[in-house]
Image 1 (cartoon, rainbow, N blue to C red):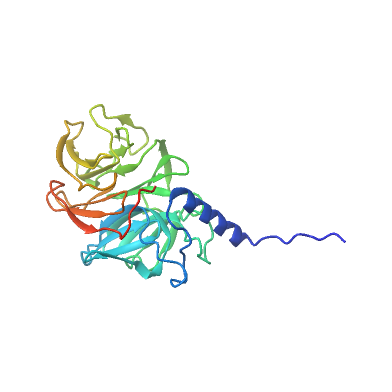
Image 2: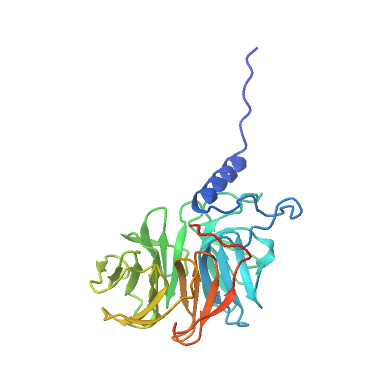
Length: 301
């Protein structure tokens, strides 16, 4: 008698794929998920951080990483709503309003795809709704510049742009970007930190040209039109107007390699390093105070 093999449910296949993707981008524990048994598996913490922001509704600092979105207060990080989604792109766009991207938690029973596409929360990360590109895009950088939303999609290696709050997208230049920056006052100008330098677009991300004077940068922000602040891999905080020259403002405290920079205002900056420590500066990066340090830290990507 011939035995017909049973087909695995599609949902299980998708969840397995999501688990493999998470394992590929992080060396941290990937067993955490929705409804996990905290007594059986230790909490993995934030995981590698990819985004920082401040909610203008109440001034709370948020950090987004491989194991969820976290509220930072009094040196501790509290996971929002017990959600373990792998948050690769993250930005705060208004009071209690966040945009994000990445992958579902490996144990999420509702996961439909290994790529979340663009998701939005209007209640400070408690719940999320899918806006677009589910199953297609994995945005590692999201930038709101006035009426234009830019995203760097790691799957296509392209800058995407949307003029309807992320519901529809125009796929633009292909570039090896680690971070994007733009400003509402000059939304057609887009900056891309590449790790080895900086590239600039003046046509909304359709084409890019290298900025000759720029050093290797891992993160860049444009808090004012034409005024840049950026991080080098070794944690130096640099500033420039337009094409430079670049001046050194300060340096992150000794720890891991610099990874994340967010300009809340021209003076107030948030940053993180590869040990997942979070720092804040009130003087444009000249001095920094520690906001959160995980109990154990290791470099992971």
